[in-house]
Amino acid sequence: MRADTQPAPWRDVFRVRPRALPRAARAARVWRALAAPFAVALAARLALVLALDAGPAWDGVIYARAAEQLAAGEGYTLRILDPASAAVPTAFYPVGYPAALWLVRELGGGLGADRILHALCSAMLVPLSYLFARRSAGPRAARLAAWLTACWPGAILFSATWLAEPLFALACGIALLPVLYARRAHATRALFWTGILLGLTAFVRPTALLVAGLTGAGVGFARHRSKGAGRAWLSASFGAAVALGSAALPLAPWVARNHAQLGAPVWVSTNGGVNLLIGALHDGGYERLPEPQPCWAQGLSEVQRDRCFTRQALAEIRERPDAWLGRVLLKVAHTFGHESAVAQALIQGAGLPASSPAALWLLGVCRVGWLVLAPFMAVGGCVLAARALRRRPSRVAIVTLAPIVAVAILHGVFLSGDRYHGALIPMLGALAGVGALALGRVIRASADQAP
Image (tube, rainbow, N blue to C red; front, top):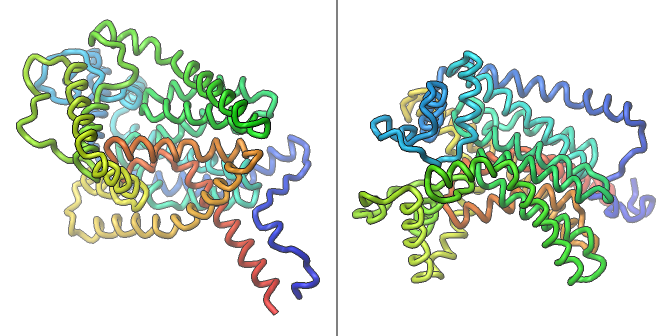
């Protein structure tokens, strides 16, 4: 086709063209579009967890031990970190993921049932990616997102580990659906329910609270952006207050428990100080702190120790702010720049020698899969960022990008690691679908314009 017979083909490259279909017809179309990728995703994940007899590794050892101790009626104590410790109440790790594994124990399951739970959580991220992408760029992008998420090597490997990312990603994605699909007039009400669900998600990882604040602020800002900067920022503050206030409600019993048993109203966990100090001294994942370490001194309570680490970290940041800012960039790059940790955790959990063919294949496929998907995610991110920065910002784009920004901020400041982007699989999968669709349209438009 000649270029002069198709005026302005670039105009439609990134346009979403919703079709006016009855609700029942739309629902049937969604089910048909999701059936195949979800079946493939579930089959791949179940095949992996059944074929590879992997056990807990890394933090998963602590989570599984905590679940066993909760099931035995011991409570959530320092024995989750070291069985030889005294049974003193703790909040060092968030309690949500161990509590989910405890429910499995209460239903009579063990490590094998954990594997099935992980496979189901990972497979359920496929329809979430579909829903995010459909709302962002229509059904074609949604189908691409579903298939890309279903076949994402890292997402598949997560299902055979005892890492909390799949459960957090599932809970966070579900929490954002009310505000993602709400009508404009009902945005505040939807934000309240999203905040409640993100408060529950914070039991798994405190990142959810930052997601709530950014989502509320973004939705509020987008609602009144065209009415002037002052009105927009006031609305952003109100939105953040609604989201964070509602998120605090489900956390209230845990805060009261911590105040009674730890002597301070800890919101989620007490490992923020040590993670902040690790992030202030290093530019990658977990590393041991230099010795001697005064915060490990005898006589300090858990909360006092957390505050001690925080003081050390802030002193280091104030002393060398330029070095700390450089570390922030390196930690963000480490979080999003590659995908290796999930394969390494699985290799260790399965007891595979690091140089064995199976281990090398797992790590290689995981890294190459990320390299293939990352460009599509980057293009999709640019498309949605452009919509979020318009004079009338897209609420959908803001809701999709808010968790990604939250993870980038949190792990740029605190401890980083490439496993942490696994908490964003539904949103990153949606970006990949949007990016793949956008690139396809650009290629077709270029071909139509060619002489």
